[in-house]
Image 1 (cartoon, rainbow, N blue to C red):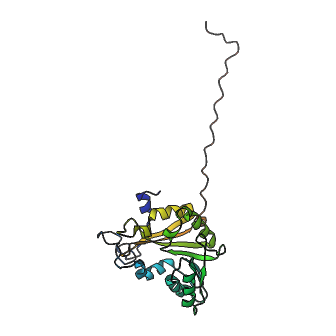
Image 2: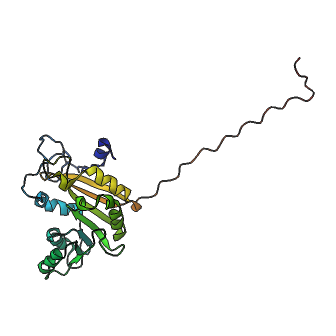
Image 3: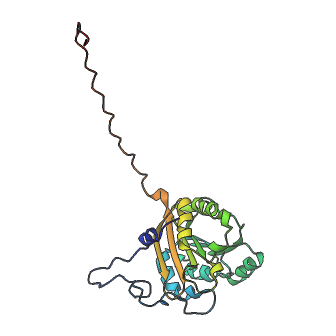
Length: 250
């Protein structure tokens, strides 16, 4: 399990450009924590991070034509917004395990053909390999079976394209004042994602929501480690030969 120091090392700060005075977080505030309630949720309900949808969508950096699987799409709230980013040439696979939610989304998106609600399995998206640019999980990770999360992430690794990404939004249970059972430890998500072949490239608290955003890319994007060169074994000098005819000491 990652230590506190290793967790901090993963947090990515925005590098300030010319003239910038300090690194800025999603709200334009410094990453210094000066108020113990700075990252607490300021909105009632279970989805306070939706107030920061512009920030989340900016971090996702979706392009026209992208293909996204919205895992656990629910009512299609995020699918609707991501559909605007991918445009008419893109696709949002709105995956749900409940048929009634799929039926509701089909009515909602009847006039938006790029959003495709469908029934998936709890342990699989059922999508073909190398078919998606992004796998998006919003308040879904803690619902995955504890002993099946690594396998699920490995499955998503096959579903995304070689340059695809994985994005996880979850309540940060370590700072939650209530509803900890509907959240996750960031360190656990990182550890399980790394075991599944993902590498974190962005990991931030969404200020004022009590939630975090973590974005991963496949480990295969990085070159394999070069084998270490082992020093050649040193040959032992040959043992000195005794002169012939030498007499043994008395």
